[in-house]
Image 1: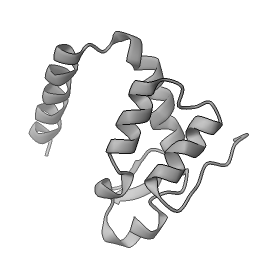
Image 2: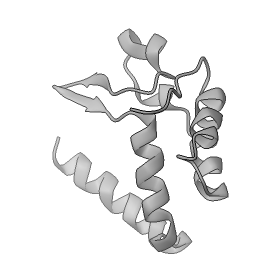
Image 3: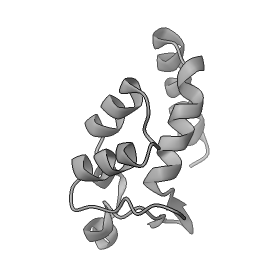
Image 4: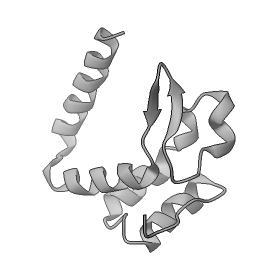
Length: 100
């Protein structure tokens, strides 16, 4: 990894990703600032929420490193439209719930 984006808050983490040109678009910047990574972590790894690395979230799975989220969002951004994104997210949520 050629960059260091770990920080002490979600905002600082996202701005570090932007500084390293991993967050490029305003839409991805707004989304990543609005949705705090810490909300998706179990208490035992919450102190590491803003480190740019994968973290275990239980059931032998991890949450991806923030730079991976930024890269995926930037790649998808040109193809996601407001109404389509809402339905897509709803379908992902439904599919994930069905798998539990």
